[in-house]
Image (tube, rainbow, N blue to C red; front, side, top):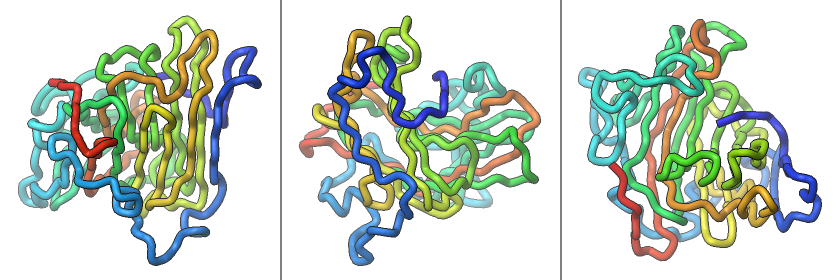
Length: 289
């Protein structure tokens, strides 16, 4: 999961001839063109139908007094089980189950100063579909340049990266930033440099609640914030990569990633709900466990 902050990078010598289309509204206020009467959920605005129960979680359990472990019928836990930890992103710190709890009707992931942080992976995978998550993030200690990265990712069920792609439809360099960012990775050869597109929309206060969505079809990837489309990508294949939308089955992950090891600025990442929709109203998931 190599990261380079490059906007709409087109890797490869023939990049200028790629069949890539991108419609971006970057650096525009999230509410600048919004219809005040329009729903702020992409699913509601565009009629995506009912959420798939197996892949969706309203996080309507747990309490301040008794925080709950995320529903293990729906989620794989960090470290493989309750009260376990595993290696953090790129070997930095630990992803620990204790850092993801449902508290008072919302998921809370906490990133600690020592590098322990939260991670969840959905057990529901599908090729093509729509995902929408209501989330916010904030730092919880004094300023530091060693900050957690809040992410919403579609990760390949195969765990083959980069061959099977990766869609980070929200990835920020720090909690509570004023610009929403994303890295959409092409399925590509592991021998090639990272093949990805960076998208950005500013004027979005990520300390506030927003609805982040992605639509993945055989024709395109589209991103939405509060029901407003902010990117559209298609094609782009070349001799080292497939088209950007040509990945196999994927599943949702919710991550507060550590890029630095220890001595980080602590952080809170909250999710009100996470919902999955099929493209045609008929769920055909690729099973995961």
